[in-house]
Image 1 (cartoon, helix red, strand yellow):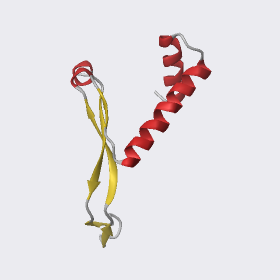
Image 2 (cartoon, helix red, strand yellow; image 1 turned 90 degrees about the vertical axis):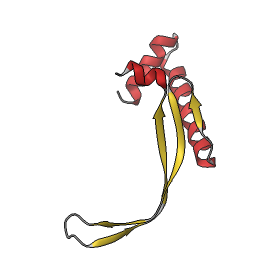
Image 3 (cartoon, one colour; image 1 turned 120 degrees about the vertical axis):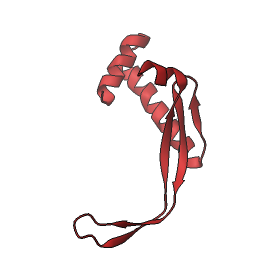
Length: 90
């Protein structure tokens, strides 16, 4: 499912037109992105939670040459499925 498919599904399920569904989805994405950037955790009960995880610097290998490379530390977004979602996809 891509963004257009999700917008259409939201519009159909919520009884909205596609423009309003797009505004709602864009607002969710924007606010979730801002919260994660600040370091906040987003928890949607039954669905799951989004959090920032710190990945430390490490040494890796270039698979083509075998040469060692330094991979810098960075922050990544982590998603953990909630119990209802996990049970639904079982």
